Length: 242
Image 1: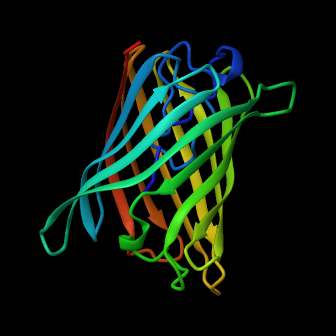
Image 2: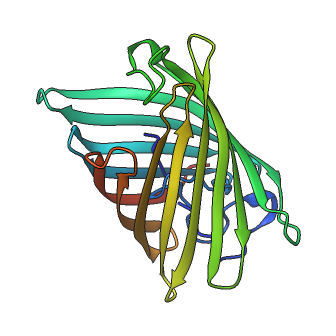
């Protein structure tokens, strides 16, 4: 995973796409958000995922806001697979950089770059069996449609050790529910060089316990391989460290 990952599009935030109000996260959807962790803050986004192949407890995305436009990112996972062996793995290191503020129909825009730390030991990318994934670059966008509705979307590329690459797309419309919750639906997938393409859908709900603490629930399934599905619970929080 990066999986990944929340978008809340219905709240006006500060300059350079920095999250200055409620905590903004990249979970529970796969669509990465364009907001930057507030400067001087540490943020943790943890998910507890169950799928037919494995249990993840948890997946963790850790972030530090270095400037108003830049955050550092660390992705790890603790998993138990069918062989019942528990493994901890550092998945990726990277950063998110804010590019554009919204202007009329121009979306709020950031770019995320990840390097897969132990890519030689990673599984082959989902449909491209000719090389390991060594990292990705994803542009993340957001448009506010009204006070209660918004849409986030990503376009990017995953790079492989043999020089090939896969396209990445994610689209997640969402709706504010009450003052502290929101729901979303999403489609996402890849376009590898093989004849098959991986496409999935999911949906979920998130709720703010306070400005710095958020919980979520989500579930999804593959369009192309219905036997592949997941269910997830999440917890995200932030605190000031400098």
